[in-house]
Length: 150
Image (cartoon, rainbow, N blue to C red; front, top):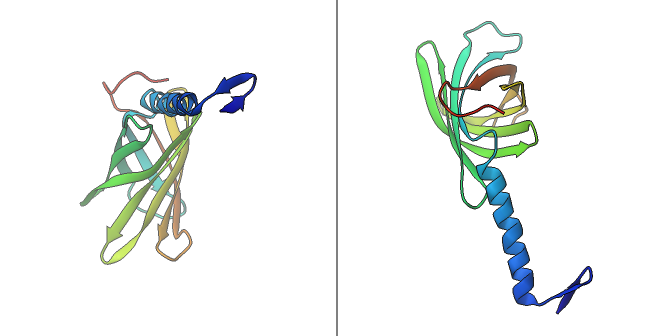
């Protein structure tokens, strides 16, 4: 038996405690403010060009992880990609979108915060094997009818 604090816990009790902690994490992910559909715009720093309209939808799995899809649109272009590395820490969040275009691959990395029901932050475009080649900012809000804001 293992002693936790002043309580003796056998292997079955230890497994139960771990299962409760894992399920608590899953409940926290399912209740995360980031779950839902968001609409935002992004602009590259120091570059003339169109504003990118974005929509992302994030879901929480029972195991506490997140999944999502991201759609970005500019005049004459539209891309829908899976999101990865979705994280939430208080009012801060981040995610990555894998991009492949004209034989080039890399990551579109977003980091932001929630304040007064709106999201804002920065992004970087990181081609494989290179540092960020484009940086910028984004802002947005929960899509209309997509749930309650925090």
